[in-house]
Image 1 (cartoon, rainbow, N blue to C red):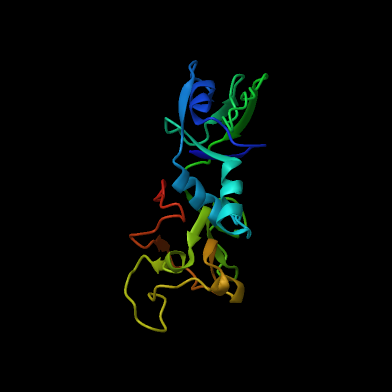
Image 2: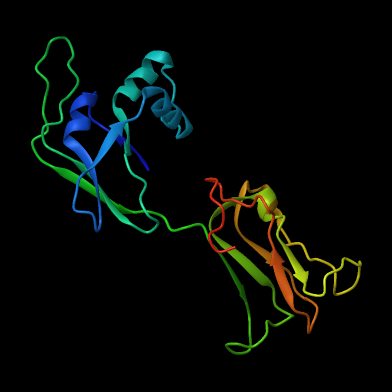
Length: 219
């Protein structure tokens, strides 16, 4: 996990490494963090649109007010984690001036995102009843998936086969105009009407991953 902090001025990286740390729920210890190299920080700033004109000098001024940090441990999905900005973090030494030090501890808490997962849903007359063929079926993802991969999902009759015009033909999801313009999708829908009294299974592209490159945890 990486964290981009915007500061009021340049900071001394060594003091950040000494006086800032991560904490995780259930672990009674400080987890060291590291200050990420400036080249990667600048890539993140550029991707987020933080460099908005001003040439190289303007970009350097913006970059000097940001620090990219990484906890030196991978956290479990759904874990509650804190980033602690401790007292004693120093401003960068500029022109021989005495650096300023933080006096109070600050902390920010967040929850690690869950594992990448998919969930199928359809309308039924009652719990445990078959899906209604006159209503669409939906496969939802809890994280964005590149559109080309999501569009490769198929609803395949258990009987197999691919004879056009029969109930054995694999069914592709229907993408509307908005879906076709999007670069990622969080769900795909199989439009009604669907064949009656047919048992289906969902097949996924072998390379299916979310936009962060994570494979499905419940496939």
